[in-house]
Length: 310
Ligand code: NAD
Image (cartoon, rainbow, N blue to C red; front, side):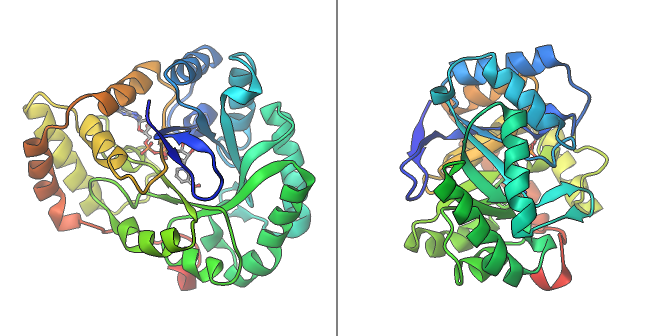
């Protein structure tokens, strides 16, 4: 496993991070046994960063991850990140009061005394003034209490990050679906973040299933042209005896400015494939062909949250 330092936190995080949303049954129904296998395989291979949220499976993912980690070794074997503010579809609460209670509930489900990173989840659904005036200071208070070591913000539209960081310091940002084969818009924000030593976490290297043979789940928000073009890329790779997901992982993991890339799965075989992607040489010629197929939808995205935050 390779490790990179996450901004100013000093945490040396594995370049592959474990995204735990699938443990909440977000992509398909899962069993405790398979989740445990996926988590153990990840830990044994040196993956030391686990990301969760009360939103994933409406608390199920935190409960499942807590169980699996508790059964897999001591607390100092991994960094644990969770979130506050998003609790269901259309259910957000970024108030200082809810944030404090939310972390206590998460700690119980995760079976730990502290998390390493507490992030405000999908801030584009809130008013950004509230985020920097109320939510971020509330997170800092929790940091002083020792219940979280660091704080961050997450979301889809990239403009939300400077809009908050210009007013309030955070230790990390988590961006998703913006550093993968079909979308590299995150590159434009990296100089701003590096200048401020904000740690960069990138999630969804498979664009939430778009860059896989199986394709995305029914709830995937991408418009049809993105879905269609990614399916073409997957079919092309298959016709060449290759796996689009492997190529997508290799592409995402190669960027040294991104400390960790969170990939989600509850399937041990996927964990193993993703680990193998890190070691295997990249087929550069195939990568160029796939990038050409994806070119018509390059950096195309979808709306998320309030209109004014997109
Ligand atoms: P992803 O791009 O990691 O794709 C996940 C899908 O790909 C799942 O269906 C999984 O079964 C499948 N998959 C994984 N490895 C595979 C492989 N080798 N071959 C084929 N299919 C494979 O998207 P994601 O799970 O949404 O993102 C990863 C993690 O990042 C999440 O679990 C979550 O922890 C985090 N995340 C956070 C936010 C946020 O904070 N707003 C948003 C998105 C993701």
